[in-house]
Image 1 (tube, one colour):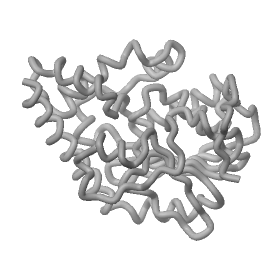
Image 2: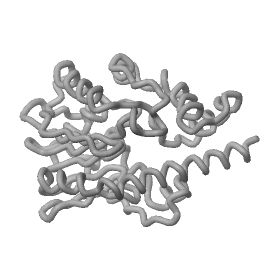
Image 3: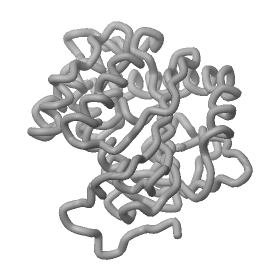
Length: 267
């Protein structure tokens, strides 16, 4: 049974990556245009894998991922044919605990926020590391236009708030089961076992689903409820995804409770 489930998992992983790669090729021009307009200086791109954002002259990214390149290759064997970006910083891309407060000019997070177990905490972390007037460049799949999410319910604001206030452990197993059953079509009688295997691997799934409208509502709520110092500059629908550009405004530093002993800085 485990062999069969592993084969299904591999086929699903390959299908995901093939779909993403094909769609990226179709709409890379939109991403490049927005990057050229808004990104300057020294920044971070998180979770780039084999699809880093094309940056304009005058912008330089340091790459962040949760594993080194060898571990990434072992975790994502379906990416074997592709060249992976070698991370400059190995860190949890949801928390950026090794990155200094106010140290970067931009943060790029493409197709990452849906993988985050606490998206509100992640937005706060990105604002924390941005300098004043720094830019968040974020792309995410629109649930209605993504075959892996279109059968799933849109994540409610209440759910996201609970994940942030209580921690995401309460919903983690449910997300893996929903992903197995609705996103990749594992038969109902096998879904729990398949989900448990994914959870044991800490495999990165779409924990949450968004539309542009629901994400902008989340951003507004975070500004009001948590003092998130991000001001919307632009939003654009781009095939199966939406792109949000936001500027770090003056405000609270949003420092972590304890500063890391050896912090990364782009300076």
